[in-house]
Length: 319
Image 1 (tube, rainbow, N blue to C red):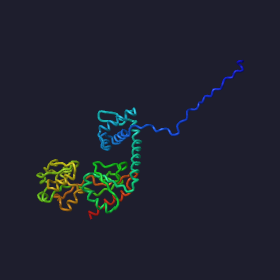
Image 2: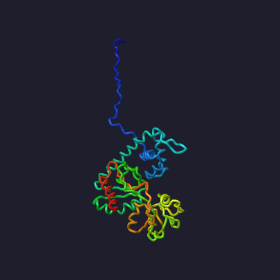
Image 3: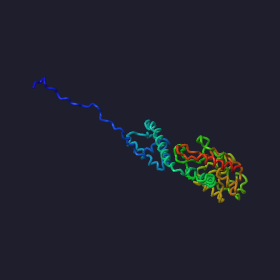
Image 4: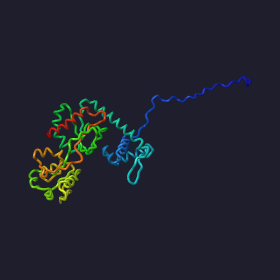
């Protein structure tokens, strides 16, 4: 066979790439708990505050963040002698993670809300829950028949944009949420049982009495004395402190000493004569009892009605 008669065989070579999957798999995520720990610590600027929000220890938050850094292969915090600071990459990612967890929380809340008769959840400072809200629950139930109410006592107010509570009751200053309702001004003044009040003629007589303190508001005695009895020799730090205001109030009701009373909490006892105010001068507080409604999607539809009823219950009592 001649060379001219030979023709090479055609070889078909495809230049096309293999077909891409129609629905590519989602990227594998790091552990959710590690992401939650980082988002909370970065948003709050504190490992300790993040631990409080998540209900774990600060050590657990630290371990989760180290695990996340190892999984991602990038640092999220710069360790410095005076603490930690977010890296640039972490600062850029934080808003997206926060929105993601907010959306996840809203989706879960929407599932809870699918129950038509779910309770309206109220979060309150322990002393407010015990001394202010609890006495009103019976009348509140009568005003809203069929509505279930659940109450959670906590030390810090929930975030109305993301936490699952529908209303919160805390002492706040004038910078509270725009949708919040303040329940009038508040004030502090010494209170005790009437028999003891009869023996107290002037603030100087407090020098020989047991002063009762709430552990959080321990500075209230010094504030009142500085305005109502300047220059007095009464030691404002003397006397026992109680971790719960209700315990301090019980001690005052038993005649164990003189309590620096918050008017919003002790007014019913004064009206009923169980307590007396030996000195009439009250000192206004910077904060006041404040009702804050949740603003997240899925918040209870009747939360505004309940909030307005609670405010009206105070106004009616003052008439």
